Length: 109
Image (cartoon, rainbow, N blue to C red):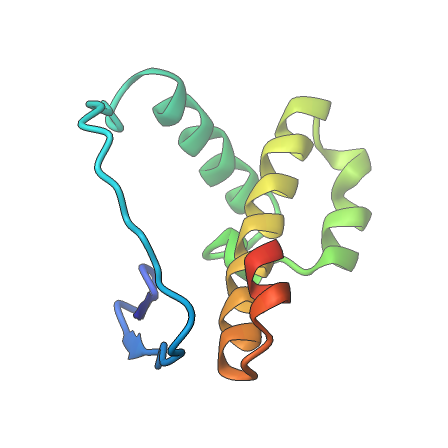
């Protein structure tokens, strides 16, 4: 399994070795237009918030800093940014649980 860091472009191999478990990846063949539409609007909003908060990337945003920013952001921007922070945290926790062999917790992620 690979952990990709899209910010610094690093790639880390994370071992997945378990005789009773397997990962299944599926291609839904559903086309996604990421350069326009709702995704693009959400991305622009997050980039704007990152600039307002003086961050290179939302990945640098901590939960406490997010909480402090609440009064400076409209509700929708706050929710979008909160989602980004939550997903980044979920990814890190998943990898940590995998490394520790804690498969139930990894599955919860």
